[in-house]
Image 1 (cartoon, rainbow, N blue to C red):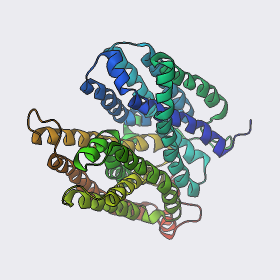
Image 2 (tube, helix red, strand yellow; image 1 turned 180 degrees about the vertical axis):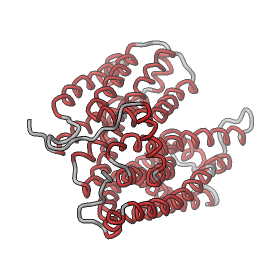
Image 3 (cartoon, helix red, strand yellow; image 1 turned 90 degrees about the horizontal axis):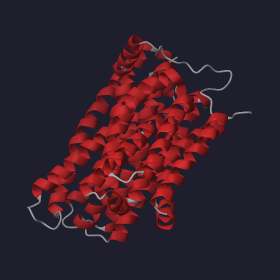
Image 4 (cartoon, one colour; image 1 turned 60 degrees about the vertical axis):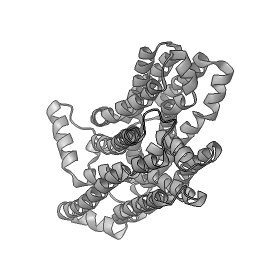
Length: 434
């Protein structure tokens, strides 16, 4: 069959959408899960925390393996693990096996996104890669949406086993599509792979980490993503309803606005990065400044912030999501194709590590500042807890500025011609260093 870049990307993208669906499918089944497994709310939260930990911990091992076996095989492995995990989650009825099933889903999920990014590099021209990367991140929201309304309807209409079993069955269908459609690179292009020895692995990881552009990507991902992820994943809803005194419906609409703003901003950021690669870090720093400014205005406002200001906060945080994708464009510009998987894995840890740290920090501050026996968290406690974000922002901004300078100087010294092309805004987009 004749494979076009968009066809290959679309097939791989379907696996990523399914991965996001599996990742978030428990969000509408929380109360049912508490009853089915006879667990507490804290034990329920462990499902999500464990998945995030597994996802973040696996990024570098997955990246190293990706450089050796390619995207197609990695997508097969990830899809197989997620399908097995979801089928298992459908039939188990006790807590420990259910945790094991979610670990399998987290492991498979960890393999998908970086594999799709590597496919994009080999199938699309450089100038189009930033846009397609943004479209990939945006399309993942389809999985999150499907995990909300359709999954809730399936649980209500068909019950736990059939709903989660049907979700697992989608993986079997996509496995066939993946086998027929996806290849690591066009037929006349060799998808460069790294050496397979342990010494090669260590050497590639050291080289990727020594590259200032990789660290610039890591801190970009770290600093831009965590605020909106923490907000939508756990603390946003209670913050809005208890600290900002908005209704449950309004809180839901506000959180939705952050998703809509991410979807709307992504293509524009992708086009800008493709046309003005030299100014990628300036764009990132500007977006971070907008997020910090919006949060500061909300936190210092006397009493509950007005609705318009909360909307501004949601929009600015939402844009941080697609801004984190710029980190992967730094990987592409500053690493050879044989190291893309490992370098991408390093970068992809950033936002998830930051998210976990801030989720825990907010919870600790809330517990410390809340009197024993209190019915809920106070507005003052929430304000103090949300201020923990400033630590991560400060560290991240300092590191972005630091490694931006180092990356530019290193590139100017090692590849002056490529540096000149990126600085002038290339028609063909920033090159990769092969």
